[in-house]
Length: 196
Image (tube, rainbow, N blue to C red; front, side, top):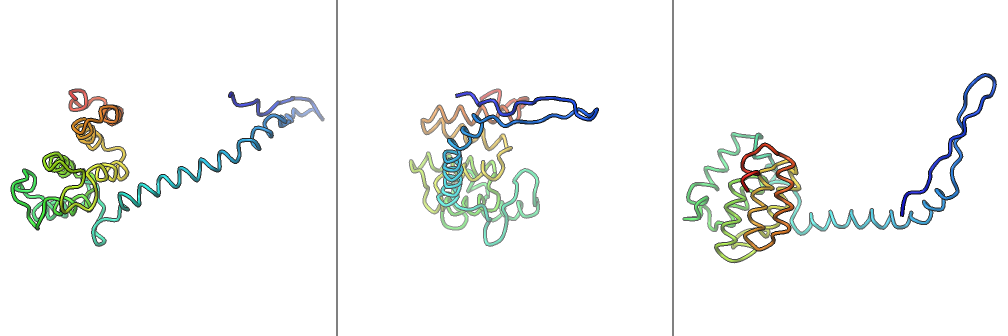
């Protein structure tokens, strides 16, 4: 249904000055009254959907007051410390966990740096290797970690690309294509997005 005509402008002269008188169309008032309840319902539905995603996948509040920080360029000193203690080569290559479980180590890293590219890719590989959506020791599902990364930094094309690859591997090609298109829109000249 097309949006009704909103205003009708009638120019006229009065006392040597031009004036415009706006007359609100009755159709506009009827349209607003008829659809006001739908707009209110949509507002509350959108608000509930956003809060539900936050409750299922958690708030972005870091770890014990640390973070969240952008993996790409915030707190390089903290990134080194977190990587040295929770994201060593043994964890990245899924050989031996540093503090108990791979899921626990990766959870810590992804709570402090939600868009940590290598940790997200490792969480994806762990989930696929163990054939579970929520690896042992992880606080959230693998899809939740991607959702948190996207919610934290929607402009991070690499997160979208890693997410796309994960979705493709779990047989969700339509969603994978959607994330890939987001990545291409964000960085059209990136050879990684063009290659994938």
